[in-house]
Length: 187
Image (tube, rainbow, N blue to C red; front, side):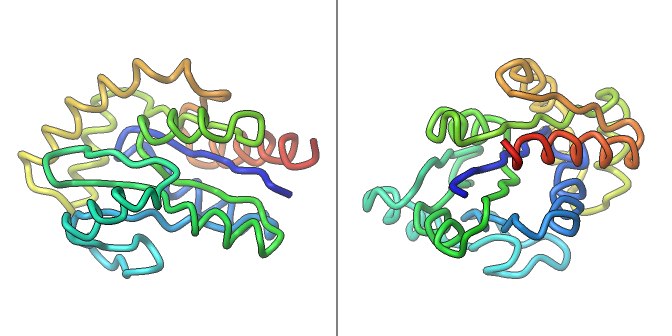
């Protein structure tokens, strides 16, 4: 079952919550742990939420062609997907589920083609997105402002994804992604 499911969204859209829900509902899925150079947030753990690398370590892996995709989101703030991570999951007989930023999602879809299902999680509005980021209390005001500005740009890419799910009501969004995944995994 060499399939991949890609979840992308602006920060604060509920993407990670929906990915965790899918992992609970679909035992045939395994989470692809991405690499990043940013610092851990909240209770994030190295090797579980992300592989936390220094910018120099990340650049070394780029030079070794170790990534399926990577991006420098902000200066020295890299995110990427290791080829070895995808192979590890496929070797275990599972499909890969990704939780990545919008540009990463587009790159992964191009890389995996028909093996991939890409899902864009849409916030109900920019105002609601900002409210969620503030209530999350993991970022300072300047970071939130940057994320909100970036979200407007990211939402212009939604039509490059196979499916768009508006996360206005979490239970409805969970149900929608369950139905989408059921159809893709049985195909």
